[in-house]
Amino acid sequence: MSKNTIAYILLIFTTLFWAGNFIIGKTASLFEIPPFTLNFYRWLCAWLILAPFTLSEIFQKRNYILENIKLITILGITSITIFNSIVYYSLNFTQVISGVLMISTIPVMIIFFCWVFKIEKTNLYQILGVIFSLFGVIVIITKADLGILLNLNFNKGDLWMVVAMFSWAIYSALLRKKKFELSHITFLQTIITAGLFSYYLLIF
Image: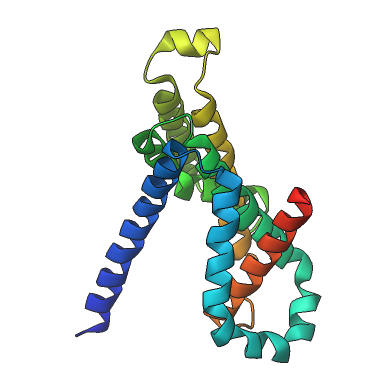
């Protein structure tokens, strides 16, 4: 099996898992499972699964991790703490399809924040993409009903999903700011750790 074939298969599974996350979040809301509890234990389980494969490298490179702890903490808060929690919370009030459609505009939001943080230069076409993406989000939120926009009568879940979008876009943009000298799986583990720790501080 070629590398390209493997890559396409993995991308398909990634899409399925991403979509499944929204479906599970919506199902959890129907069973009245608290969104923040769901998110915390989801990532705690992920941390435990990754621990046997990452703790050794984390210990070996602990000084390097501490040197970059500020950026790692911001990445953990924007992705683990804020994004996933708000997605699960918003699904209590909005439909899965609306949420997924809105989240699909995140790549364009990433371009915007890369420009804001001066990580990458943008061109006219990218700026136009940001404008059209924002217009698309407005259409989804208002269900193409101008009266909703004029009366500011928005669905609470859709508005919170916008917050989640911006949080993930900030996370993705900041990922490009620095190339970390850690394996991908260990880097993910450090982000999860920072996110769970900030989550613990917020709750307790």
